[in-house]
Image 1: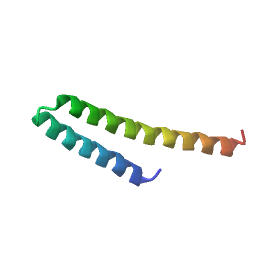
Image 2: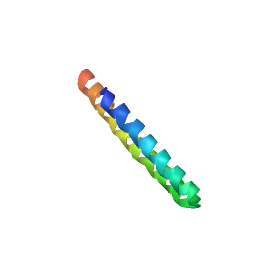
Image 3: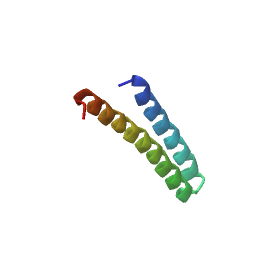
Image 4: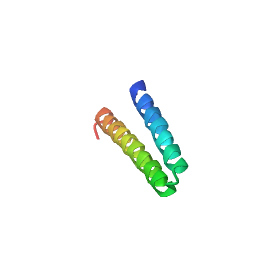
Length: 64
């Protein structure tokens, strides 16, 4: 596993947090929630892709 993916996830988390705070202070709580949910979806897609690669590696290793 590359450390790069962890830095990407952390950067997305920091960016989404800053955006959500700015939107909340501006009185746009609904947009802040959407920004948070979109950040969560992006990270989940990244994690699902990593899990798919893991299963592909396991299949190749055991010749399934």
